[in-house]
Length: 470
Image (cartoon, rainbow, N blue to C red; front, side, top):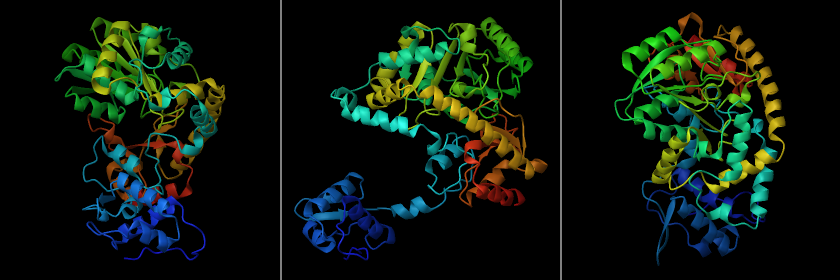
């Protein structure tokens, strides 16, 4: 069995290139499950590298599960190995059923070349990469080994919780450390809240439309989910009150600021009326504030108005700093935090990883976060205007123009079925977010959510035109 080499045999291979040479054989089917690879000495001689380079390459490929060692016999391709590069290069699989998991699967598993106006995060070059790199270097240079190897504490490091206190205070929410818990992500935070406060069969209210992962999380906890129509000022309060009277729900989940997917912001009047109705019915409100730092103007904060009595606030740093350094948080009254901390021990043996929290702490204390967010808000304002203009040219109309953030909730022309448009776009390697993945009642058939930060590629609008025309 021969491993092909590049045109020049003089330049030494590095470990990654040796690994790639083996992967090419796996991709083309030249090597299949059960085949024996060249010995370390044979491959080293063939590629003109040191045996230690081949040893390292084989060790890494073994760690990935692509090959395996047989003592005394050599290295073999793992049984049933699929061709990795070919899978990565294909557009995401077009699932027959477009449900709340659909957008997540397509966006997370998309090939690097895919257009992703349906995803829920910013492009890498919009993030504070220099600050994150400086944080990584500082962590690597530190003489303290604990952040690199130790478990996270049960509630998260005090330094990051102090920074979170300052951030929440800027939104009018005064807290103490006993009111704060750091979690693995905002999704993990919501999962912990559901574990603490819900029992199977409990009724939960969500906005219609709402963030689709609210629906999947509640489904996992076997809750009964009811939707309340969302308006530009917040939930339809007449419908909200009627649902409270009829169903006595346990929780209400919402984004008060820059609602996902609509971009709406709760009005002050609606916020006060909502909290009054919730208090009268013993309803607990979970406020996801993940987009609060993107708001260009101050907006009502349910947790601030309530003083963390019956409102829990959850969020994370994934949208503003890094989705790789996963860290979420919960702000709530102390007795709830005590129970949530115990659940976090039971389900994760401690809080978020030390590497993530150390990186975020350094990035937040370096002095550049405020400037980063100011620049990001300006850039997003331009992107929203440009995306709305381009979408209107092809007959797609925004439901409203948000006061911040990166979403536009839009109606397709001629009541087109957004699900079918998304399927056709996916065939051309573009991920869209059709409206009904956000709707509990299936009444958003002709709506689509667009991420304006991913709408700068002219090819996106050409593909969208073709998908609309069918």
